[in-house]
Image 1 (cartoon, one colour):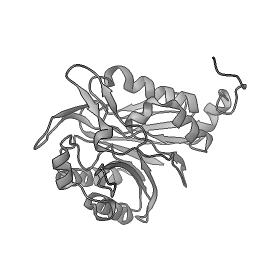
Image 2 (cartoon, one colour):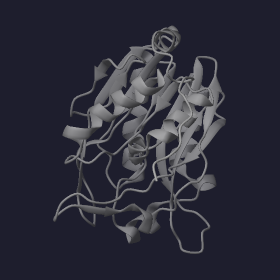
Image 3 (cartoon, one colour):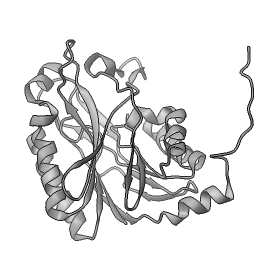
Length: 277
Protein backbone atom coordinates (compact mmCIF):
# COMPACT_ATOMS: atom_id res chain seq x y z
CA UNK A 1 0.00 0.00 0.00
CA UNK A 2 1.33 3.42 -0.97
CA UNK A 3 0.88 5.77 2.02
CA UNK A 4 1.21 9.53 2.39
CA UNK A 5 1.62 11.49 5.63
CA UNK A 6 0.46 15.12 5.37
CA UNK A 7 2.48 17.35 7.70
CA UNK A 8 0.55 20.58 8.38
CA UNK A 9 0.89 23.93 10.10
CA UNK A 10 -2.76 24.34 11.00
CA UNK A 11 -4.23 27.62 12.22
CA UNK A 12 -7.37 28.19 14.29
CA UNK A 13 -9.43 28.66 11.09
CA UNK A 14 -11.10 25.34 10.10
CA UNK A 15 -12.00 26.48 6.57
CA UNK A 16 -8.45 27.57 5.85
CA UNK A 17 -7.04 24.31 7.21
CA UNK A 18 -9.46 22.19 5.17
CA UNK A 19 -8.45 23.97 1.97
CA UNK A 20 -4.78 23.18 2.62
CA UNK A 21 -5.50 19.54 3.46
CA UNK A 22 -7.51 18.99 0.28
CA UNK A 23 -4.75 20.44 -1.90
CA UNK A 24 -2.12 18.24 -0.26
CA UNK A 25 -4.35 15.16 -0.35
CA UNK A 26 -4.95 15.62 -4.07
CA UNK A 27 -1.20 15.80 -4.61
CA UNK A 28 -0.66 12.65 -2.54
CA UNK A 29 -3.29 10.69 -4.48
CA UNK A 30 -1.85 11.88 -7.79
CA UNK A 31 1.44 10.39 -6.61
CA UNK A 32 -0.25 7.02 -6.06
CA UNK A 33 -1.23 7.08 -2.39
CA UNK A 34 -4.04 4.74 -1.41
CA UNK A 35 -3.84 5.66 2.28
CA UNK A 36 -3.56 9.33 3.28
CA UNK A 37 -2.96 10.44 6.88
CA UNK A 38 -3.39 13.83 8.57
CA UNK A 39 -2.20 14.99 12.03
CA UNK A 40 -3.91 15.71 15.32
CA UNK A 41 -6.46 18.59 15.37
CA UNK A 42 -6.48 18.80 11.59
CA UNK A 43 -9.43 21.19 11.68
CA UNK A 44 -8.41 23.71 14.35
CA UNK A 45 -5.34 24.21 16.50
CA UNK A 46 -6.35 26.63 19.23
CA UNK A 47 -6.03 27.09 22.98
CA UNK A 48 -8.82 29.68 23.19
CA UNK A 49 -12.01 28.01 24.47
CA UNK A 50 -14.23 30.91 23.41
CA UNK A 51 -12.90 30.74 19.86
CA UNK A 52 -13.28 26.98 19.80
CA UNK A 53 -16.90 27.28 20.93
CA UNK A 54 -17.49 29.65 18.04
CA UNK A 55 -15.88 27.64 15.22
CA UNK A 56 -16.12 23.99 16.27
CA UNK A 57 -19.07 21.77 15.37
CA UNK A 58 -20.57 18.47 16.49
CA UNK A 59 -19.45 15.43 14.50
CA UNK A 60 -22.66 15.23 12.45
CA UNK A 61 -22.31 18.87 11.36
CA UNK A 62 -18.55 19.19 10.99
CA UNK A 63 -17.62 20.45 7.50
CA UNK A 64 -14.05 19.13 7.66
CA UNK A 65 -15.22 15.59 8.36
CA UNK A 66 -17.91 15.73 5.66
CA UNK A 67 -15.50 17.13 3.06
CA UNK A 68 -12.79 14.56 3.80
CA UNK A 69 -15.32 11.72 3.70
CA UNK A 70 -16.41 12.99 0.30
CA UNK A 71 -12.79 13.22 -0.84
CA UNK A 72 -12.05 9.64 0.22
CA UNK A 73 -15.12 8.40 -1.66
CA UNK A 74 -14.35 10.37 -4.82
CA UNK A 75 -10.74 9.19 -4.90
CA UNK A 76 -11.43 5.68 -3.59
CA UNK A 77 -8.79 5.85 -0.86
CA UNK A 78 -8.40 5.09 2.83
CA UNK A 79 -7.99 8.21 4.94
CA UNK A 80 -6.85 8.65 8.53
CA UNK A 81 -8.04 11.97 9.92
CA UNK A 82 -5.52 12.16 12.77
CA UNK A 83 -8.07 13.94 14.92
CA UNK A 84 -10.69 16.66 14.84
CA UNK A 85 -11.62 18.94 17.70
CA UNK A 86 -15.38 18.48 18.04
CA UNK A 87 -18.18 19.69 20.25
CA UNK A 88 -19.97 17.14 22.44
CA UNK A 89 -23.20 17.04 24.38
CA UNK A 90 -21.35 16.74 27.69
CA UNK A 91 -22.91 18.95 30.41
CA UNK A 92 -19.51 20.48 31.22
CA UNK A 93 -19.09 21.64 27.62
CA UNK A 94 -15.81 19.86 27.01
CA UNK A 95 -14.81 18.92 23.47
CA UNK A 96 -13.72 15.58 22.01
CA UNK A 97 -10.30 15.02 20.42
CA UNK A 98 -11.52 12.38 17.96
CA UNK A 99 -9.62 10.38 15.35
CA UNK A 100 -11.38 8.91 12.31
CA UNK A 101 -10.51 6.17 9.85
CA UNK A 102 -12.47 6.68 6.64
CA UNK A 103 -12.90 3.93 4.06
CA UNK A 104 -12.75 4.23 0.25
CA UNK A 105 -16.55 4.47 0.10
CA UNK A 106 -16.46 7.51 2.38
CA UNK A 107 -17.90 5.71 5.39
CA UNK A 108 -16.36 5.95 8.87
CA UNK A 109 -14.60 2.64 9.52
CA UNK A 110 -13.47 3.57 13.05
CA UNK A 111 -13.62 6.37 15.62
CA UNK A 112 -11.26 6.85 18.54
CA UNK A 113 -11.38 9.50 21.27
CA UNK A 114 -7.95 10.33 22.67
CA UNK A 115 -7.63 8.61 26.04
CA UNK A 116 -4.66 10.31 27.69
CA UNK A 117 -5.01 14.06 28.22
CA UNK A 118 -1.95 16.30 27.94
CA UNK A 119 -1.90 17.77 31.45
CA UNK A 120 1.72 18.82 31.97
CA UNK A 121 4.01 21.61 33.12
CA UNK A 122 6.97 21.47 30.77
CA UNK A 123 8.57 24.69 31.97
CA UNK A 124 7.75 27.91 33.83
CA UNK A 125 6.47 29.38 30.57
CA UNK A 126 4.85 26.35 28.92
CA UNK A 127 2.10 24.28 30.54
CA UNK A 128 -0.99 22.51 29.22
CA UNK A 129 -4.23 21.34 30.79
CA UNK A 130 -5.92 19.48 27.94
CA UNK A 131 -8.48 17.91 30.28
CA UNK A 132 -9.89 21.37 31.02
CA UNK A 133 -11.17 21.63 27.47
CA UNK A 134 -11.36 18.02 26.26
CA UNK A 135 -12.97 14.96 27.80
CA UNK A 136 -10.88 11.74 27.64
CA UNK A 137 -11.97 8.66 25.76
CA UNK A 138 -12.22 5.31 27.51
CA UNK A 139 -11.90 2.71 24.74
CA UNK A 140 -8.98 1.38 22.69
CA UNK A 141 -9.81 0.90 19.01
CA UNK A 142 -8.52 -1.26 16.15
CA UNK A 143 -9.81 -1.45 12.58
CA UNK A 144 -9.27 -4.19 10.02
CA UNK A 145 -8.46 -3.08 6.47
CA UNK A 146 -7.38 -4.99 3.33
CA UNK A 147 -3.79 -3.84 3.92
CA UNK A 148 -3.51 -4.51 7.66
CA UNK A 149 -5.08 -4.09 11.07
CA UNK A 150 -4.76 -0.55 12.36
CA UNK A 151 -4.46 0.54 15.99
CA UNK A 152 -5.54 4.12 16.67
CA UNK A 153 -3.97 6.55 19.12
CA UNK A 154 -3.34 10.30 19.41
CA UNK A 155 -0.23 12.23 20.50
CA UNK A 156 0.16 12.02 24.31
CA UNK A 157 -1.03 8.40 24.18
CA UNK A 158 2.49 7.73 22.91
CA UNK A 159 3.85 7.89 26.47
CA UNK A 160 1.67 4.99 27.63
CA UNK A 161 3.16 1.77 26.18
CA UNK A 162 0.44 -0.43 27.64
CA UNK A 163 -2.06 0.99 25.17
CA UNK A 164 0.08 -0.03 22.19
CA UNK A 165 0.73 -3.48 23.62
CA UNK A 166 -3.04 -3.94 24.00
CA UNK A 167 -3.59 -2.82 20.40
CA UNK A 168 -0.90 -5.17 19.10
CA UNK A 169 -2.24 -8.11 21.13
CA UNK A 170 -5.67 -7.38 19.66
CA UNK A 171 -4.19 -7.78 16.18
CA UNK A 172 -2.83 -4.38 15.19
CA UNK A 173 0.20 -4.47 12.91
CA UNK A 174 0.01 -0.76 12.02
CA UNK A 175 0.00 1.83 14.83
CA UNK A 176 -1.09 5.40 14.09
CA UNK A 177 0.22 8.31 16.18
CA UNK A 178 -1.12 11.61 14.80
CA UNK A 179 0.21 14.46 16.91
CA UNK A 180 0.71 18.13 17.65
CA UNK A 181 3.85 17.38 19.67
CA UNK A 182 5.48 20.06 21.80
CA UNK A 183 8.50 21.76 20.27
CA UNK A 184 10.24 21.60 23.68
CA UNK A 185 9.89 17.85 24.33
CA UNK A 186 9.91 16.80 20.68
CA UNK A 187 13.66 17.04 20.02
CA UNK A 188 14.40 14.64 22.89
CA UNK A 189 11.37 12.37 23.19
CA UNK A 190 9.47 12.11 19.87
CA UNK A 191 11.67 9.78 17.83
CA UNK A 192 12.83 7.53 20.71
CA UNK A 193 9.27 6.95 21.88
CA UNK A 194 8.01 6.16 18.37
CA UNK A 195 10.86 3.76 17.71
CA UNK A 196 10.26 2.08 21.06
CA UNK A 197 6.57 1.51 20.31
CA UNK A 198 7.52 -0.02 16.95
CA UNK A 199 10.23 -2.28 18.42
CA UNK A 200 8.17 -3.39 21.43
CA UNK A 201 5.27 -4.50 19.25
CA UNK A 202 6.93 -5.41 15.96
CA UNK A 203 4.55 -3.05 14.19
CA UNK A 204 4.65 -0.23 11.67
CA UNK A 205 4.33 3.16 13.37
CA UNK A 206 2.98 6.00 11.23
CA UNK A 207 3.22 9.32 13.08
CA UNK A 208 1.83 12.36 11.28
CA UNK A 209 2.57 15.67 12.98
CA UNK A 210 1.73 19.33 13.07
CA UNK A 211 4.76 21.56 12.61
CA UNK A 212 6.03 25.09 13.15
CA UNK A 213 4.41 28.26 14.47
CA UNK A 214 0.62 28.12 14.35
CA UNK A 215 -1.29 31.28 13.49
CA UNK A 216 -4.15 32.17 15.83
CA UNK A 217 -6.70 34.98 15.80
CA UNK A 218 -6.80 34.90 19.60
CA UNK A 219 -5.22 33.08 22.53
CA UNK A 220 -1.67 31.84 23.04
CA UNK A 221 0.37 30.81 20.01
CA UNK A 222 1.52 27.22 19.70
CA UNK A 223 4.69 25.84 18.19
CA UNK A 224 4.94 22.15 17.33
CA UNK A 225 7.80 19.79 16.59
CA UNK A 226 7.00 18.41 13.14
CA UNK A 227 9.19 15.49 12.06
CA UNK A 228 6.37 13.21 10.95
CA UNK A 229 7.96 9.77 11.02
CA UNK A 230 7.52 6.37 9.45
CA UNK A 231 9.10 3.68 11.62
CA UNK A 232 9.44 0.07 10.48
CA UNK A 233 8.54 -2.93 12.69
CA UNK A 234 12.29 -3.38 13.24
CA UNK A 235 12.54 0.16 14.65
CA UNK A 236 14.19 1.82 11.68
CA UNK A 237 13.18 5.34 10.66
CA UNK A 238 12.08 4.97 7.04
CA UNK A 239 11.07 8.60 6.51
CA UNK A 240 11.31 11.90 8.41
CA UNK A 241 9.37 14.96 7.19
CA UNK A 242 11.63 17.48 8.91
CA UNK A 243 10.09 20.76 10.03
CA UNK A 244 8.44 22.14 6.88
CA UNK A 245 4.82 21.44 5.90
CA UNK A 246 4.73 18.77 3.22
CA UNK A 247 4.07 15.18 2.21
CA UNK A 248 6.01 12.04 3.10
CA UNK A 249 5.19 9.02 0.93
CA UNK A 250 6.33 5.42 1.27
CA UNK A 251 5.21 1.89 0.46
CA UNK A 252 4.03 -0.15 3.44
CA UNK A 253 5.03 -3.82 3.37
CA UNK A 254 3.14 -5.90 5.91
CA UNK A 255 5.57 -8.82 5.50
CA UNK A 256 8.04 -6.82 7.61
CA UNK A 257 5.72 -7.18 10.61
CA UNK A 258 5.81 -10.96 10.43
CA UNK A 259 9.58 -10.92 9.94
CA UNK A 260 10.21 -8.68 12.95
CA UNK A 261 7.91 -10.68 15.22
CA UNK A 262 9.50 -13.93 14.11
CA UNK A 263 13.01 -12.67 14.93
CA UNK A 264 12.02 -11.19 18.30
CA UNK A 265 8.88 -13.03 19.49
CA UNK A 266 8.39 -10.89 22.60
CA UNK A 267 4.83 -9.87 21.79
CA UNK A 268 3.41 -13.23 22.84
CA UNK A 269 6.22 -14.26 25.18
CA UNK A 270 6.97 -13.59 28.83
CA UNK A 271 6.66 -15.29 32.17
CA UNK A 272 4.17 -14.50 34.97
CA UNK A 273 5.49 -12.57 37.95
CA UNK A 274 4.22 -10.87 41.07
CA UNK A 275 4.42 -7.12 41.54
CA UNK A 276 6.80 -5.63 44.13
CA UNK A 277 5.33 -4.77 47.51
